[in-house]
Image 1 (tube, rainbow, N blue to C red):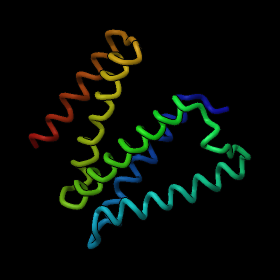
Image 2: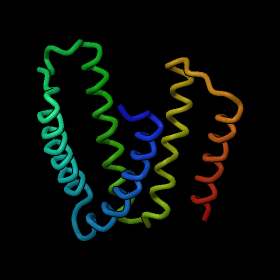
Image 3: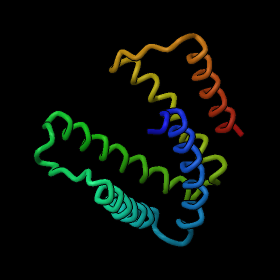
Image 4: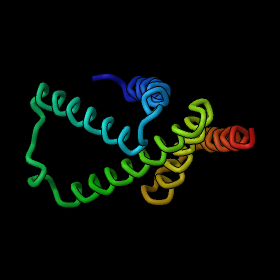
Length: 140
């Protein structure tokens, strides 16, 4: 199994590629339609992955608590994508994507508040620097 840090770097690389590819793909079409097409591709792709790895499980047999939070996560992801694609449609990817990454700051703060996760001084310093960096980009 790959280390979580390697997977996190892979996530960042693919997210970076996603922004550039989406900016090109959203040109001349509705941002909502673009989001729908992306979502369909993700569903098919993940369906193949889950099938290949034999991980399918009836969603109605999953613990209700887990299912509720996965549904809420899906709704918030969908709202994020709708905002992201609309922003990409009218703004430059080189500015939209870094501002979108303020999500990192929100993750840390929400994890601190609701999951009791604790960070050290260097991690908080990094979060502060990310916040300042995003605001510098916003001010342009």
